[in-house]
Image (cartoon, rainbow, N blue to C red; front, side, top):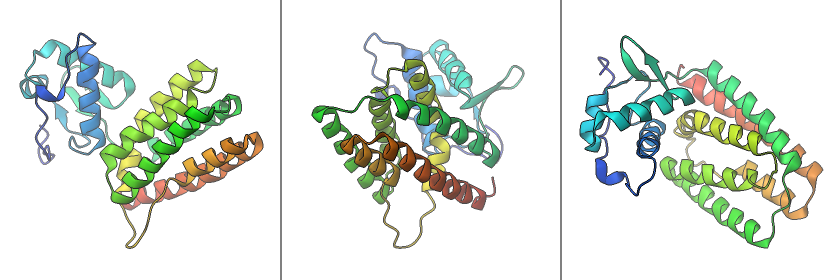
Length: 234
């Protein structure tokens, strides 16, 4: 552990990881990713394989493979001489990641098929939960729902390579999005304005409105988010 950078909450035990014959390193990576996004594992914290193995009640082998997966995503960093560390946060990185995200997402929205009634119902239900989690400050639940919303939305596009990259970038920006969500204005009620805008346009099957609304709301989000992150001195 880096001096002065404690783990703020206990890590989960192996009971939190479901072993059903699927990829164990991927499951471990998912759990560690959630802990990082929630702020339980702080930026700069050293991730010792032995500590994680003990906490999860497993051997070091799947832990090491999980850390390699997260390093490939850019969520953690690997120094051959010092080990694995939670990647630091910076306003400049956030700006670049979000710009890249927006370019990909705009292209995907140009090609998405209009959702049928079942798909639209599912998206609207997700949006209701997003609003609720956002307003209540339940950021862990919000992050999970946010990923599911966009996974379903972008699955309507035939451009699967772009979709895969967009989902990867959503994961990379989870920490910044959650960090920005911690700063609240007294009396502020939060709603997922962008997602409401997207579904309103999709319900009308209006491609022009969809793209214009996306571009307008994304710029607002980027400006607001960077201001919130700057306020934290990153």
